[in-house]
Structures are given as C-alpha cells and as structure tokens.
Length: 631
Image (cartoon, rainbow, N blue to C red; front, side, top):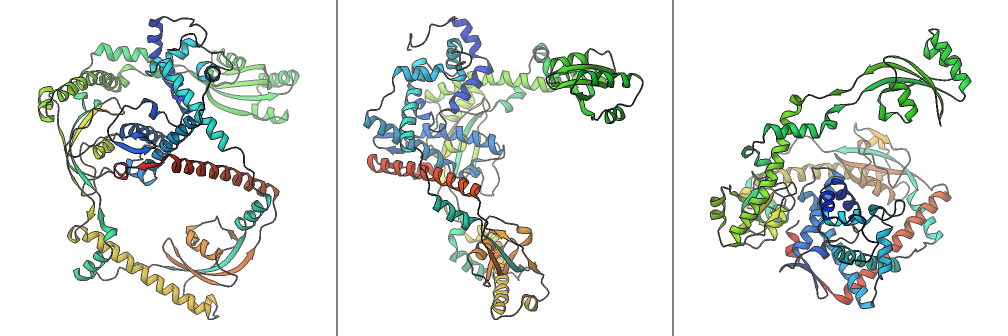
C-alpha cells in the first residue's frame, strides 16, 4: 500500500469501509472506472500463472485463463449491446475471439516497447490521474479517499495493485499517443473520393427470379458425386464428450424454502419498488407575463372552456398527461398541482419558463401493490439468494474433494450432487443433431472451458455469471471431419436443389442479356417480365425489394454507359442496362467530412504499422488450436 501517496483518510474505520464496500454504488463506480482501461484490458495484470499460452509475445505469454477472462468480459459486453440472444457461436462468427486476442497482443507489445525505451510514469502523474477521476469524486467534488478505498476494497484490489495498473495504462497511452498523432489527408484525395462515392447512375432492369418448381431429385449416384466434389461444404465440427458438475442456483430452488418472515422482510425493504406514486392529469397554458395569466385565470373562473380561452388569448393548451410530483420540471409547479384536494385550477405559477396556468382533470392517489400479488416472485428471489450462499460453501467442499483425489463420481455422491453428462457438443453448443444438449449451461465460460481443457483432464472450478459454479472433465474428442454421405444426405440434396435452381435462373438471365447486347429493346425480350426504371441511385444504395441488391449495384457502377450487366438478386438474377451516369455536385461539407474520415483512417494505419513493426521486433506466436476452441 502506498500510504502517504494521497491526503490522509477522513474516516479510515474498517467497519465503515466493509459496510460501504457491499453497496451497488461502489460496484457501479468501479465498473465505470474500468471502462477507461477497456482499450487495453486488465486481464494481464490480474491473471494467474497457467501452463497453456494462447500466444507468446517475445518472452511474455498470454495465458489461457487470462484470455478466457478477457473473452468473457467482452462477450458479456457484446450481449449487453446486441441483446441476450448472442451465443458464443455468433460471437465467433463476428470474430470476437480473434479481436480479444489481438487486443491482448497489442497491449503486450506496447508494454514491451515501453520497457525497452525506459518509459516511466512519476508518482505525481499517477496521483493527478486519480485525484481528477470523477469516479472518485474528482474534478468537481474533490478527491474522496474513503470512496476510493471503498471501491478498491469492493473489487479486491489493494491501493498498490491499482496504482500499478493505472501506471501501466498511462505508459501505454503515452506510447499510443506518440504514434497516433493527428495525420491530415490531402484535399485532392478527399475530392476524388467524393466524386467516386457520390456519383449516381440510372438503369433499366429486368428481373429473372428463380423458378419455384423444384427439379426432379437425382439418384444417389449423382448426389454422392456432388458430395465428393464439395467435401468442404459438408464438414462436421469437432465434438467433445463432457462430464460436469454444475451448481446452478436456479436449479437449486427446489432445495430451498425461505422462511415466510424473510420474504415479508424483502417486501418491506423494497416497498418503494411496489409503490405506485400519486399522479394528476394536468393541462397547462404558458404566458410571458403575469397580467395575461391572471386575466386568463379570471376567464376560467367564469366557466370558460380552457381550449377556447387559450385560443382567444393567442396561446395553446399543452396536455401533460398523468404526471407524478417528481415528473414535473419545477418544484413550484409540483407544489401547486399537488396542493389541490381534487380536480381544479392552480396558478398562475412563475418558473424560468414563464407564467403557468394549470388545470388538474383527474386525481390518482398513491397505491401500494399488495404483498400477496408479489409474494411468489419475492419468495423465488429470496430462495435464490439463499441458494447462492449455500452453493458458495458447497463449491468449496467440492473443490476440496477433487483436490484430495476424489473422482467426479465420488465427489458428486459424497455431496449429493447430480452429474451432467453431455455425449457430444461442438464449440457452438450444438449436438450432432444440431440441437442444444439438455442441461448445457448458457454461461459463456462453460464451452470455452470444455474446449480448452485437455482430453482426459479436469478443469479448474469455474464460476457461472449468475452466481453458480461448475467443474468439468473432458472424456473424449471427435476431431472435425467430412460428414459421411448417409448422414449428410439431406444437406447434400438441399444444396443440389439450390444449385440447380440457380443454374437455370442464371442461364435465362444470360440468354436475355445476350439478346439485349444484340441491340434489341428491353420490352421486346422481356417475355412478359416487368421492365423497371430504377431512377438515379449511388453506390451506397440498396433496395432488395426492387432488385437493387449489392451485387447489381456493384455491377452497374463497374460498367460503362449502355453496357448490359447480369448480377444476383435476393430471389434470382437481374439484367440491367446502364442508361445514364451523373457526377455529383461539389459539396465543401462532404469533402471536409471525407477528409476527416481519411485522416482518422491514416492515423489508424500508422498505429497498425507500428504494431506490425513491434511484432517483427519481439515476435508473436499464436496457438491457433487453442484459440479455435473459442470459435
């Protein structure tokens, strides 16, 4: 600990720190703080020593556990951005494992280069960074040491560990800034891209959709030949057979029965969640001066209609709808509205916006959702909290059993735990039939652990993101291989049918294009098909509904005026004649926007070249087999 590094603690009582460390506020603040390290990651600092290295950077290794932790963090962030339906398989398709590894490699390369250059960060610079961090009350509120220690304590970091982490991050940022200083693209380059990108074209188009009638199925001989010629299209992934003990709190609820008093206490503690605040349905008319507002109030007092009176006063009625006290923007308005015993008029009330005349049309008093209506949900929440606490103790007992040499079966029997047996699962979480095996945890750590643990060995005890635990043993592995014809026959037949339909549609489109190139008009060769005028469109436009697929847009812009092109569409092919080419009008704003984008891309290119040079200097070796377990 670097005592004396900051001002003395104001309330350094261990009891208060422990109580504060349990708050969600501290956890949220630390999560926000860690976002400042997101570009570089923090897994390298906190990861334990492991035998397996996903990559070697110089003499420094990026271990499997470090990579798995970084991957899990990024996977969870992706799920928050894109939705809970994101699976590890989809993440792999989006290139997440490679992205996480490359970020870790770049991080390590820059650290090695900083060490080679002898770069260092002084205590004063680190102190200023922490004192000015708003997550610790800096800048506006002044640094709060109690808050600082509370956040670190919550997340299991000592002050020395955090300072070392921050120091390394500052050094990396210094190196990155020195390489990626602003680069300015030339105006002529931006103008050329503007002319290319914003050029528009017009075409006449005839669509040739695929025939909906399926061709007659071929015999097995032809299908076998198709299968043999396209073996790579029918590969089966690697499968692993896994035995696991999964301590999932959601599956432990039938073993927990919380005391009724505990459920009632939870209801009382969360009373604010079950309280529906009082609301008033409010309309208002706003005036610039008090005199006009008073005259308007006098009109309403005689029974005048508010809408008609507002029109006569040259104003309008705003319907605010049902609002609670906290939803009104000014306290004066809330006091005026909620001081009324029932429906009626309030005002004029002055705010920075002007003078308000308010009408309360409906009153809804505060209500509380009865305990009976939420009792079952609360019972499950309390039961889950109890289950999480019990499973933490049980996980320690399980770890002790396995560390003492007990087999999975013996440990499960001794602790009365169920064994999960998965006969075959691939890295995307599917069995040989393409379905998710029963009981497979949704936790993103489980499958990567199953595919990074050597065959015949046990994994370390891992955590589920929902408060549970798991440990697994890999029984066997079936390596990737071509699916036998008998297994792949439905896939082969479907691919053959799609190929035949595509061939027929392409042949019709080519024949139609040949007649157009002979000089015939679109109407004379359309054979009942619709001849469509596209209007002008640019390279970025697509509209599959009218046949403007990416392929047809690219083909039209690659052709000369009057040239005939054929390209794929969503439902078949399209034949198009390029009718007109129109350069864009000059736009200074568009050119400057392109220039800024080019400058940013050039700066990024410099960084990439710098990282490539560091790779050549220090050397990078990646274990692709181990990385593939995350794909």
